[in-house]
Image 1 (cartoon, rainbow, N blue to C red):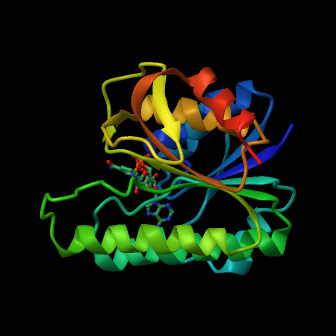
Image 2 (image 1 turned 30 degrees about the vertical axis):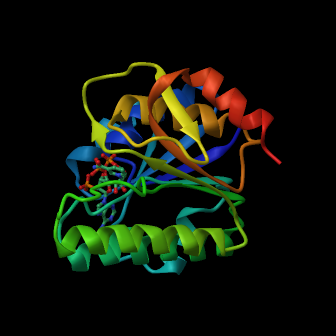
Length: 220
Ligand SMILES: NC(=O)c1ccc[n+]([C@@H]2O[C@H](COP(=O)([O-])OP(=O)(O)OC[C@H]3O[C@@H](n4cnc5c(N)ncnc54)[C@H](OP(=O)(O)O)[C@@H]3O)[C@@H](O)[C@H]2O)c1
């Protein structure tokens, strides 16, 4: 199967999806920053690769992506301020795309954000910047020439898996559990005919395998 490299590999969604990706027959390498995350990732079955997106050059990253077919970009500065949002969610994605192209990676999955997130909530300049940076990251990936799948989840929750989602080109906004996002992405990765598309992901009534099959059957 594929060698998958997860940028932001120690993140919450990334750690939830890692065992499922490995159970699907993939080899997973995970970029992490903090020493204590090394053994957590190894225990999940991933190969930990240490590095900070703000410090790595595209060439550094390209050398990490040798023999990698698929990158999942699950990193985010998580509201740590505009400069870090720009450096991680924005320039970090751009570096990853440059490295992926240099290393011959075929496809990049990107966790983006639902367009309605925070609408009418007056969340301030930092949030406006976050939304702008996430959108421009989507644009950058779409225009890269790489195969892409952009997933735009609604607001993330931690109440555990429901096993059900609403997924499509345009679906109503809502709060979706991280466990469902992770399950959906792992199943989408296992369904390679879903490609070159942007998927809005929200809570819903469709069992995840049904939602993924529906997207695969309408893939062009
Ligand atoms: N919160 C929401 O409601 C929401 C909604 C839609 C989409 N999203 C997006 O969903 C994505 C994943 O969510 P999540 O909950 O899994 O996020 P998370 O747990 O915060 O994971 C993000 C990961 O990015 C890593 N990271 C941050 N800065 C880095 C750097 N300089 N170099 C390398 N890695 C770095 C973090 O590393 P450390 O572990 O070292 O901190 C962390 O492991 C994010 O991109 C977020 O923007 C969030």
